[in-house]
Length: 171
Image (cartoon, rainbow, N blue to C red; front, side, top):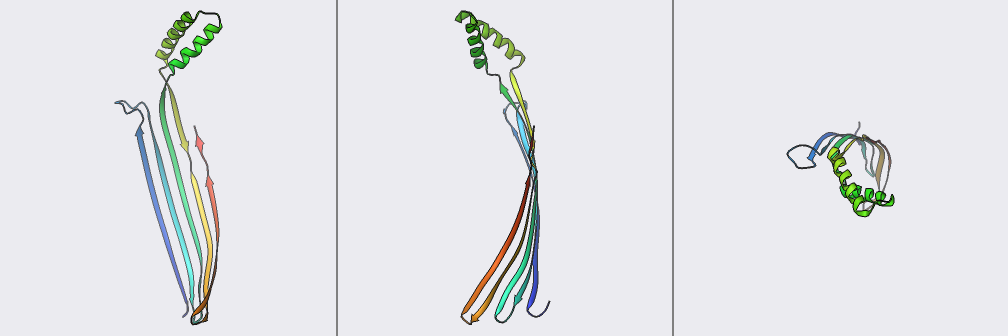
């Protein structure tokens, strides 16, 4: 580019793939489980034009980076039916309706036993998709001017612009 100018640059790219799995009930059968799959791709590029003069030295440059992430997760959790809560609620309703306490407790207990035999757990099935995109662009410059052999003035600036786009869909 000339005697006093040099052009330099650097570029990078990376990809991270992450797979996580867990067994929520730690039993021999897989009744409660979950996991997350994540893929993050990152790239960046920087270019600089350097000037190296007798009294003035400096540079001007540009930078751009992108991070693109895909995150998906899913889980199934089996929540045991709260027998004591059901018995308590039914007993209160029956006593309020005129049943003697002992009969209300016995009736509520029998109903809870029959109900829980049919539905021992409530399955909570969850999934999410949460993509993210981050884009960063910058313009920068700095320079040094020698006022004397032992005294210089340094100045510079940097302008950044970053855009974050995120969404989340959960079911």
